[in-house]
Amino acid sequence: MGSLIPLIIVLVVGGWLIAAYNGLVSLKNQTINAFKQIDVQLKRRHDLIPNLVNAVKGAMDFEKSTLEAVIQARNQAVKVGAAGPDAIKQISQAENTLSSALQRLMVVVEQYPQLKATANVGQLQEELTSTENRIAFARQLYNDTATQYNTKQQQFPTSVVAGIAKAQPADLWEIEDRQERAVPQVDLSMKPKV
Amino acid sequence: MSDPTALNLFQQQEANRRRTALLVIGFVAFFAWLGFGGDYIYHLYTVDAPRTAYHHTFPWFGILLSLVAVAMASYAYKTGPDKVLWSTGAREVVDPATDRERQLVNVVEEMAIAAGVPRPRIWIVDDPDPNAFATGTDPLHSHVAVTQGLLDLCNRDELQAVVAHELGHVKNLDVRLMTTLAALVGAVALMHDGAARVVRLGGGSRDRGKKAGPLLLILLVVWILSWILAPIIAQLLALGVSRKREYLADDMSAQFTRNPLALASALQKIEGAEAPTTHIKRGAAHLCIADPLGRRLTSHEGLFADALATHPPMAKRIAILRGMGYAQLKKEAGPAR
Image (cartoon, rainbow over all chains, first blue to last red; front, side, top):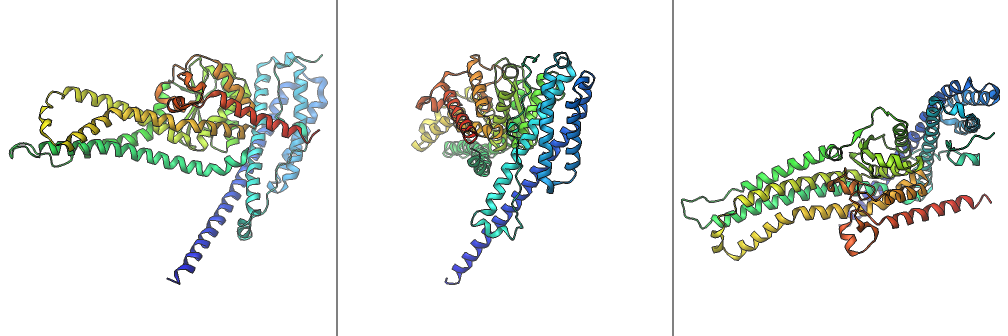
């Protein structure tokens, strides 16, 4: 009987170690997967922008600077995006620049009712809204998962296993611009500002 | 707001898996009871019969009914989602035809990203009353359906909140339990109708039972009562199972959209539309975001309403969501000023 108690203790501790280790590994993979989701959505945005620019280019000869800012920000974001998940800070910065450039463009588009009336532009606006939402939600899922992962590896007693599982705190996707916090509203009911 | 649900998600999924299994086992056990009970009664009934007459010794009814129950349960589990969608006459959105439909597809994709589940298949029920439901067996095989009325009445944010609510049901596996339940309730109702016809046909020669002992009589009464009560029990099960889940799915919607006020205003609009959702029948009522039968029971909470309503009171749900929304607004506005 006496030898049974240490055996049970070893089994319980061993079982807990395995469960904690597997839990951390699973969270790590979820975090990586969530990051890939952001990537997918950012690519979607990068592919959508040339279409949008082409659709409004003809009617916007005198708003060249706004358009160029969008194109430039997009190319920069594509370039930084190729660097992969290690460069999360630079990627989020480039994408934030692109977001604000896009928002300015959408405000300008609002000022041209005849442009907005084109079915193509209306559809593109919906697509853009959706893409911005998707990026925001992918980011939200990534941040939630990464926070869960970070909390888990810092909390006792899981922190004991964190070293063995090679767990490292994941960077969160920062939003610097306060304007960016809100999902950009493409308000179709807004009257054009003259 | 997000932490408790995130932590509970795993337990929630486990509980739903377990409850679905229990439901199926209970279903089969109930039919086994009906079958073997019938066998036993028939056995007691024929045990004193003359040597040459028929003696019921092998439990044919029990084995047959158990097999039928197993077959029905597996059939119900596999085809449940299709049956539910078929019963509402929903059509699938494959190629969005209008701007609204394209928006719906976009919104569902956005929410699938937020919930971290694969995109469900999207259906529209051609009904002017605003309502929505989700069905399926797991996140890989799931469906979200909204009525035309919801599309017409709600703006983008509200639609998003409703879809997020439905994806909450998908993610925590509520859909598995509720769809299986819907299919089994349908099966019980069907069996009951069939059995009632058989009993009525063979009801003529009952007089010999009088000489049997009290045990046989009690057994007979309990057995017949089970037959009569089966559909009522099934219905009550369906009611009890769905109410708490609505609060939880509301919570998950707020977690996915970070916009509880949008769901509150969507629920307000759904509540404001008085007409019942005629395309959604009683059997699938517990799957919906709001009671499709338009029963006034859901307007208050109490013993009677608790026992009979499929949905918690709308006013309470809206109040909880508003509370969340204002707490969020306060938190966001606080440090900035």
